[in-house]
Image (tube, rainbow, N blue to C red):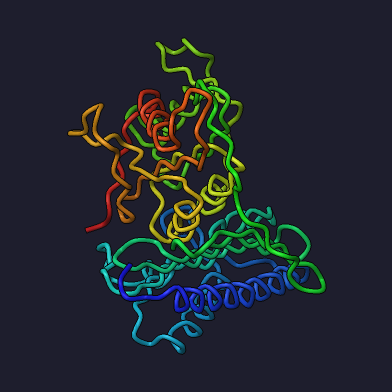
Length: 339
């Protein structure tokens, strides 16, 4: 993996964890101030695509801290990208940080605790270090993190008044997927910010997909998935890390951006999960291996890690079989990058 040693990756991981905690403290203090002063918001795309001064403040904290240590690294942040004129996919093969200062801004506005600081680091365009800190969960916050490397790892750290509690390894060992998956799975997905309402809109298709996945087997023309439940947390980042941690089985998302998923993908891949395009590639044969999703493609289907099942199917065979079953039950979504 490029020329970065495991020691260097551990240093990057340590820095990302440290700055995520600093940013989390900033957000916690910001929420305390809201008891006296209402939170001011600005709309970007529409009334559910919000930005606050806290989003911009957190991104500045993270960017300034990282670039002071690694000035030669590239940096892609949601708020600086949104404010800039360049809207193409900016990721190159060099060392690059991809950051969402607050994923779940609407949740934060409503004081719903599913809000996350997402810090990802890419090498050769592949998410390699991921840190996701949810400052309003647990006592003083919960952190999911990983170093994608044979000598790396993936961890869940909880913070209390006296500092971090001993980190726990994620998904060790992971159970097999349900034998008739998606039946019996827990499914994560979001309605997203595109709220246009017409028969072929992404919103209409997503709603149909959610009903398909929930419907009994054989229902809706054979598209019924009979999943145990559907969860929409208002944060693609949290959806992804819950699947990475084995706390859910499937994440089906489209319309979000690389900063929403970069850190989560690093964690997912290190635990043994996979992430592919939520639209089936048009030229993919039934016998072909399924390629990894394009990080900038805005469509992601993540499946958790698993062990060999009672039928002797490998983890990858189970995961790819479940991907194909999800594809059968969902409609193709059309999300483009701005030109």
